Image (tube, rainbow over all chains, first blue to last red; front, side, top):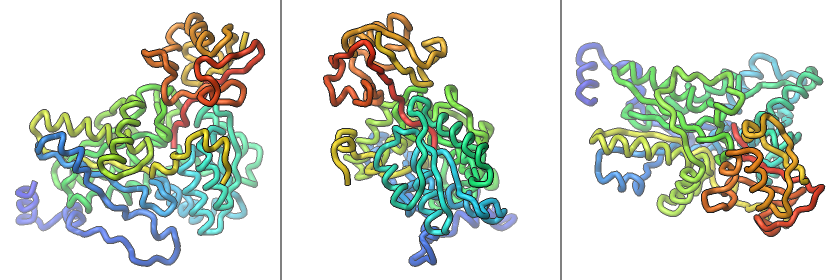
Length: 341
Length: 90
């Protein structure tokens, strides 16, 4: 890799992708408003997990999206979706309404509160209680859909409400909105490229709306090609429609998001709920990273890729995503049912 | 017979039906009979030790069986039993 970079520089000067790789990522020390804190999240190395690979030259890194101000990766698409809608005038005199399993709703709520935009959210009634309370704290209106119908039921109810009240609601539809993957194309992917100094060999992450994996993978492929190599991008999905990886989608049994683009993915890993949950526990107890189940599943998938590389004696720099913190889910059902805070 | 509400991901086992009637005096019996009528659905709900999978929630009316008597929770004829899936998608 290094030889190739030097070789290119000698002949034609550094490419844009090479220059980008040499720029340090800087987090702002102070910002004008809370939305200025979105993005530029740190990358953390997973040393304990790497140890089981026994010095095979495989690095495991995770992007700390829980460091966003409303606590999840969804702050990125929420900001981009709202900024783009404001620029087009779509939000004039309207409330924003969207369907969400929680994190997007919290992100919309934060951005909406900061920019003065009223928000309505449709979510399955069995979304965890803390999420409902957090979104309400920002002043957001909540509308519940049938828990038996999952996130697809929330999508269908949101569409119905918008059809009935077109003058009241602006419906960005995060599953179909190009601003969603663009937030990662212009943000997450570029940051990872800078943070790994252009060394990333594999990007692995799960599918919720598919915005993260599609937008990030598209850009990483382009950056890789610009320096004459391939970055492999691997998606992860729950292995069954009946699963416990909140926030992730099993596409064969779901409405497929319009923004999903399989052509930017090199492979898909099918993740059992138990493997994702066990990794979530392990990340907390051995890496000190108390994250949600989707993050655990992401790291479990990244570790599978790492093991394959190690078994083949190949080096690699693998990057995955820590979507949110574990305390967003921590309250057990018993606590929810019998106490109020 | 109790009414069992079937979530979307499991309707492939119930010929697309969102509600089925199943007999049984406890949740355990009801799940056994459910699998008897709709082969394959049982293992999506319970693991190979017969325990309800960690990520599957079963409600009798509005109460999670984990806060009742688990699989031994008694049910009567007009009870509504719901099998609640995880929340998928962003």
